[in-house]
Image (cartoon, rainbow, N blue to C red; front, side, top):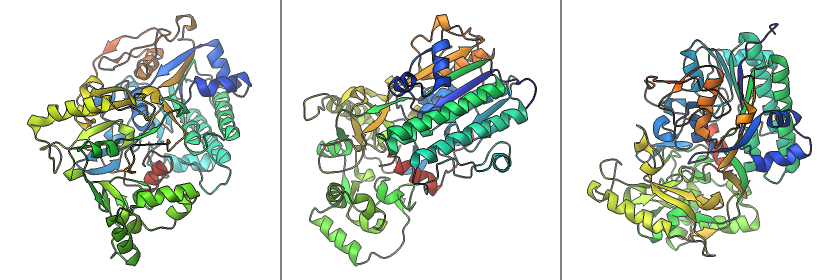
Length: 537
């Protein structure tokens, strides 16, 4: 390590961190390094965006722009009825480190979601979520070098380890060790390290308090060691969203749309990306790639479906018996798909394509390959969807949505055509939205905990005025705040602005990224991981 580090600003991303999670840890003295930053600096809630999910929220944080500008709305992108997992080529705006590169400032970036494949800039980058397990890094050969230096480095936890808390904590340790190595090697002025395990554990084991605490203790250790080794002038902690329990119901939007005459269905066929089609990586771009003649079992399932015995109903029975996972691991996709009732996209007027998008897509003629809604009826159909969705109430009479809006009231920018046509925001994010067809519109939430709108932000350092506070901080404010701590003007097209606790360095006009066409993610492991965590139903 050099005698004096050049690290001016360290941005620490803690996925899903929020007051609900952090307060008990502070009270019990579990995370002293984090607590000291919150106590001696300035902090507060950080309002997330719509939709408040990892794949869209982190690009919003590191570009300072809404999805209508950067172009990523969820874990999946769609071309017609085909789909693929998003990656960095889908992000159409420059990241923090790319803007800093234009000012001669070097960066080290570790584990930030949706950064694979990396683009050229002055610095180093090891990608995070949606990257494959052995991702391309920047510069070429960096991953091999890091593994040789620190030992094992994984993007995702080792699934063969019984102790999930330990597996996640190991990933946390790898992030810290990799960042310290890169900071030692290159002496960057800006550093960004992200910890994903703090979110994933709530999808896997939301009630495993010891695993959650062990992961946060590991994050605190790595942060302490980074600060001790490199003494950054400024430290900013930020999350992409919060986390909390669902107190409401599961609303199956496509079931509602079917009853209202918008969704057409079929048994078997292409349908949605689900546990059955993603599990073995056989579904790609909306079609089942399994190629074999249906056997007796498949024909039997298809026949049963003809009498209304769909695989969803069978699945409900298996869930009640507690053996659904066991059966899912052994039943071939062809058997499940033969009996599954699925959305028939070409025949439907409107549908929910992915629950993560928080909205409804219209099958518009001229835009979709087999669109059925004429352009002249678009606004009429959309207005009807909005009216009917706004009126939906739970079995207890409570509104399902706090807002149902046209997309242009939520998003703006050159990528808005990729957004859903109608945006649906669950009331207090207490209701679980599902895209699956399960005969009934309502049921218990498929996950007990999930994302909430309020995350967290904290800042301490030479460029931070604790007395000024963070104000009404929004996710879009993080990028201009970071740039201001480095004396760099932020992009005038950013949707956020520097927080009150920093002195703004002004604005300037940066040319929009000249992005090439998106490339495929095409990685079965990534898809399976997303399905395991509930991001693909």
